Length: 457
Image 1 (tube, rainbow, N blue to C red):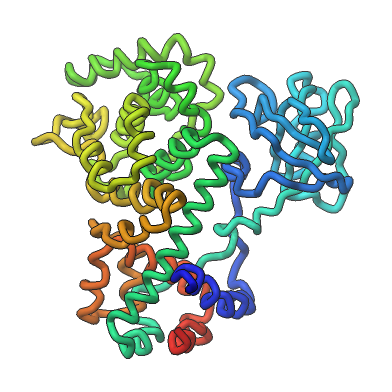
Image 2 (image 1 turned 30 degrees about the vertical axis):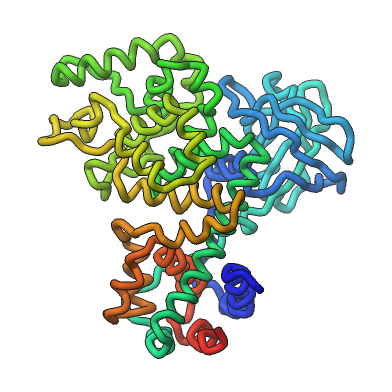
């Protein structure tokens, strides 16, 4: 018998080409160089490519973010045409011409580059040569292959044409559609985690996924960058310096006179600075610029500084976190994060805020639910598909803007809306439908096939 997720995958397929036929109203999503590098390191472009000369190339090891002057990724390993892996560095630029434009050809720091990756070649042909006049193989990648590269419409929060067909379905049938979409989404998350584990190992994959979940939507990029640039293995070796490295590379360690802070904050920051200062020069090149952080529109308890403190605690308790991931028990995961404790951050929103009126959870219940549905249970489902039954029982906590807009478009103010959204899995299914269709439909529902496709479920 076909699994619900497989059924949804087949059911959605005829709709997607139709949605992409209408002309774009604007340019496709563009990526910054830093975003491209982050996607590359995460394996989102894959690991098997063809050079501009037609030679097969496989990325055996993606290496590490380079902490010194020179190419983007050091200690990588690349195999050409099935040969023995060649160790060296990888440089990624937006255009092929950047190699010459940025002076890499005359820079000895780039002499060890074994692969030059770029996204655009332009009308002229450019070659990548080192100071030793060695020709470096080139690979061109296409940002349009990333899901996020498709232009995404931001639908209005109003009922859509699917309101009628969905309303005509029995509630259990509507739930069945959304749960099938949820299982499809779960499968894709599990596949992404498996790919990440193949590239960087299971522990690093889990660490990067948890960091991204802590960053959530607004700060997913900087948190992912932190986990990539400060890998778990490095942080665990640093032991009690892990929190200082995280705060230092994040750019959240203020260099102003500490006397402007209250005594607990002065003590806290001084301890971090004393641990960060000896290694500051080593990691300065990897520091995240302030413009990457999104600080407005956040609940005070969700400030990224508090999330960084939680990430440091995750590193400190890593053997326990790894064991939780293997068991995938939601109750155990919730208990662990409920008990996660930081003397300073339990009563502070930021380093510049006054003490909170009462202690706060370092990781709130809604964030734990996000980690369950995006990390812990996809991993558990990979080992045992029966964990799907656990997944669909996870209660929902707070909704977000996208869930509310999606619910309005699909269900309006129908009484079944509140009942359906009580489970996190249904919310995940709702988001999948919303992303597949509402955010790709450029006709404001007029030509979307989703309503009539419902009749074929």
